[in-house]
Length: 251
Image 1 (cartoon, rainbow, N blue to C red):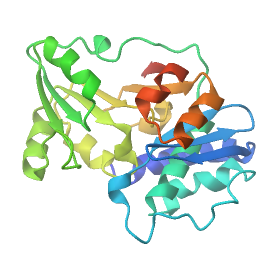
Image 2: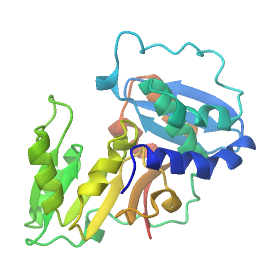
Image 3: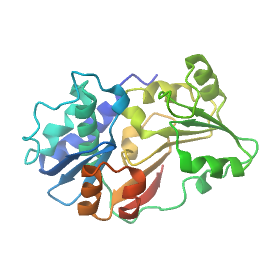
């Protein structure tokens, strides 16, 4: 059994000691993403979970004091905070700390799955650019969503059926932020291929030990200045794409 919050706990434990040696040099919180830059030039991203905001948690009491802190201080938010912005700060900081070099695989995430007409693909979180590619393989695609304003199945009973029947699962990394990733992975009892996907993905295989995950599809910044500018100006993945390298880790 994978306990709720276990992935966040694993990430915290893996990154904490490394984070003590790093200082946060820049913090950006935009409409779509949070960006954390460290003194060694590494940058981490995390999505902003706008649907989880309430009137009491959209502001950060510690705003104005985050830059210059030890990375480990911000990392704590991923396990200690319920505020969605602080949780995102923790994930972005972790992603900066564990950010790998540029020598990793940059294959197309869908191509490496070798999808066929016999596959049932569960897409947890709507990845619009991937829908056409998946359908072109002949595979059956079912989309699971929490946000009623996006395409996908919201009914929880139907979601469970889709996950248990899936042979391939593409799981958004934002499921780490809302602590649903563990329950999703628990239901993937018959999947031959499971990936965590998106710019929020921690590129750290150790974090997903003892889970069905064996593929991480994330990103590394090629131009911190431009990425941070895009975030500050309210941009999302499409605007950041020219300044990111999308890479895949297999384990």
